[in-house]
Length: 516
Ligand code: BG6
Image (cartoon, rainbow, N blue to C red; front, side, top):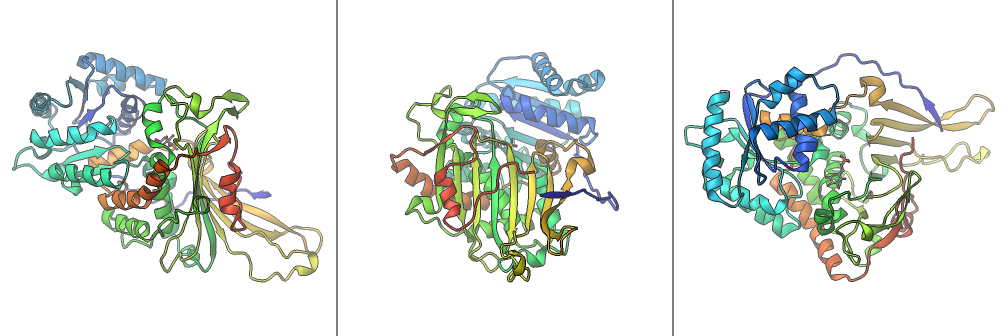
């Protein structure tokens, strides 16, 4: 396939960014991995880019007994590991804004102390009510902490204060099935109004995922053909070459359907399939996303392999390195039936998408890291080039490459110079780094800034979470009852036969991973 070089000029750039007001951030799970690897680095970046106010502090909470100074030292170390060229002055100024409180999350006294500490820090840092409570803890602690925030009065400080300035940020997974998600929502809503709740799906913070909205709704040429009359099918892929790392405690109880599909995969699907929202307003966008989720046809559970397939990796090789199978990962039972791969075929029963298949797949320990959305258009209805045996012309494919090598590619047929009838498939390719440079902001930067500003557009609403769990819970229950093992696939493979059959039964094939 030949490539057409990009000829995009950066003109008429329209940028709007709101900076955060004076804010207090209280992070539960401050000594954990998420805080160290993602949160601190993203907040520091916002700070060095002058996107957060100088009146800011972060109060880390954890069970570990450490002092403010020890917490600052840990943060400094983590920030240096991420970016060796951190300016020393900036680093000091930033880490001076970090504080720490240790305690037992189940103990009401801890929250009473926290309340006093927050009042004292608000005073010394000049902050008037804008506060984020961030749950970077294991999910079993969500109800405990939320309940305590409510009981202690921290979720609604005092009546003179603006309630909407107090926000709760919750990491995924939000529940593990429809019942637990609804119960968690109930507990959260006892203490916080939905307008105060920010459920994070970090995929929505990725630049290229947000670009789906710009691409679709800031251009007039795609929308008229974005429907069943012109689109043959859609493939959404999140392939990872990484395994489960040290997260077996969490992952073995979750699996790919809960870990990736209920949130990231369905979020991308709803952005691709939704109707044009009236405005770039949180609820207008979230209303349209929810309408898509509501229209997804229920899975036909029998026979399994026609609509959803699960797999689990066995020992193999990735990039020439031997990697162990899922059952040999530290902390995983040797008879675990947890899936590390899911492929599914979905239909959206509405006017736009009726009978257009959406094929979704995600897996760990595959040959490449590759996240993309590929829209395959219908083939030409008639070939006038029959005399040259050109009856089977490849369809146009539009690929939104989410990561790595972020970009957009459109393939089409064109005349090759030379003989009278000679055709090739060409690609029009826009690559983010070629045009905008390599520094794409980390998803958490976007999301944290939006929490501070009070913009819920990129956060998952209660109904979204509950509807997506309702769709997937029957599958989870059936898998639980089913005593058979997931299909095996070799680490380093692209796919396996049961997943291939799911799409090939319809006369289509999966796209190759990381096709450039
Ligand atoms: C997380 C999952 O939400 O997303 C992980 O819990 C997964 O299992 C990760 O590896 C993938 O995120 P990214 O941004 O690397 O594609």
